[in-house]
Length: 538
Image 1 (cartoon, helix red, strand yellow):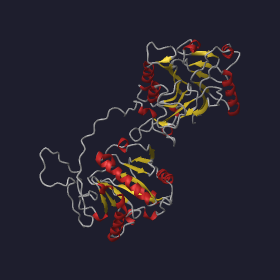
Image 2 (cartoon, helix red, strand yellow):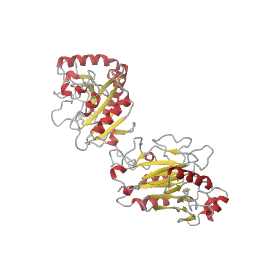
Image 3 (spheres, rainbow, N blue to C red):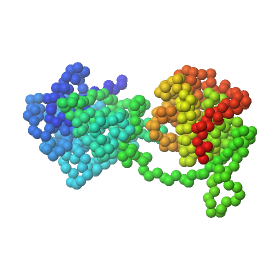
Image 4 (tube, rainbow, N blue to C red):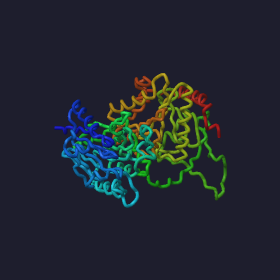
């Protein structure tokens, strides 16, 4: 029988307004049924003694739910917390302690850290130090089977929590909050993290705890900051949620990613495990440019230096681009290349019409030298690829089209960036993205949306098989191929009724035309593309 989820409440700064809080809890439970626990972060006590509290302390009043609170955040309220290791403050109200782990009978794991950050010694009784955070992390993360925790309770916000996320309102997360709490959240990977003190409500978009396609998928974290109880602006101070303890969950269910998940906000704060110093890149090879006379059958070539004869012995000679181990249909110097399809040649890359294209102006961006994938390109080749992509976007936009780009680095030997124009009247970019995602799901392909600013070289390692889509808005989709992958997947999606509505053209072999027709299409493309041709600027 499946474990019944726990029903919990989390609360922000109570500030001595105990009746307001507990009356609200009673109303919620009367309407929605009983909850298992109430977790309070921030200032539980107010700055001045409260007659209300005396009634709870003496038993005249009683909290309607098991309530667990964090400790003092200032000197004035330290007096209420007599035992630093935690104690019962009143019936049904328990102080958790300065730092530690609370594990319920159900297996729910709650980590707590009381107080505010202090970097000075001695540490005040209402603060935590780097040593406190380090010892807490070490105690929990040292086990080989550690995957994360269910809930983290802190009073301060974690610094930088707004990175990559939705707006945090008036709270500047670059300045506000604790860097030590950010560090703790990075290490512990809580499923929920609650904080307060800023007198506002902020529910951040969930963030992932792994680097996409470099680490195994892990659960997402939800950060929720809660306002103060009874605030005049009626900002949310009480948060209800259900949770099944991590240790009782199926692994596949645990790591399911919410549709609005973002990158980890703390990776820019110096805690990124992959963000240390990077090894300097090896010296890039300077590829030779090949100039083809597109009117001649075989073409001709010369060095891009434009110089003949011997060079100075002190002059570093550009090296040839990587060479294929055997015949290649796409290396520009190869006799196998169908040169009548080549429509533009740059310094490191060239454009060619696709053989059996989805439409007349379906083109490929290809490196002149032999590179298998974008991941393996040298810096100078990447720069020219980006130049071609931007130019093609402008070109197709001028013709009332948006372009979709995809790469399949699987069962291929030479990089082919497919660029397919889609009339603006056909569908919106979001429709194209939805079509890729839905058809991927139908074929049990995990096609993930990655951040627009992501560099594919940071996601895939050289030699890794993958499928990658880039839309005109900058949206990017990525799938790491582990076993099998349908070779025509990209074409099938674009040819489907949802986009181009030409399903009979999903296989390029069914779209081949005569060489004369190909030459006609190539001439037309060259003529139309000429006003946008950046290679003529040199």
